[in-house]
Length: 195
Image (tube, one colour):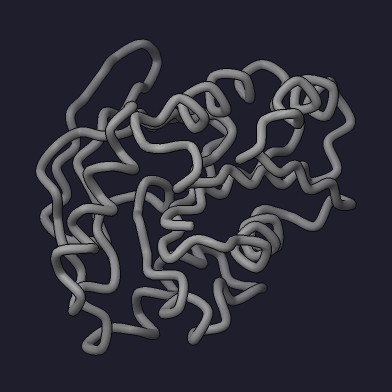
């Protein structure tokens, strides 16, 4: 298994189909990537919608009691089998070539621990191209990381406000990142956005 897409979902009935569609629709061999969706105790129709994807051979739905975004991400990372993992939130979406392009960069650059692309941010209907000059200017989703490196750090640390930035600070000077200057996901900013 080359890539694991981890989706964390909580009360996402209005957006989960868009996120799942962008994940399963990757232009990449279906036998080479998996989609692990952690339903974090949703009490709306999220679980019902996810059941519509459960018969796909490369999709796994993990149901758990509500434990929060960090623990939901960690559960997905723990369950993953891919060499590389990439996080997608239930209200965002990937471009069809994200898995193919980012995994190819990691394949060609064994010294690189993670790769992050440009992205489009949608805020109140306005679309902006974001091209991060460094990793601290991006968001948690769409960043592909070597699973072994992530596991060696114990995944995300619980009890911190922005676990993805905490991970970057912990690995600063040890992990090497790579910026891919192509927009490969859409981040929908709204009042409940985690970032």
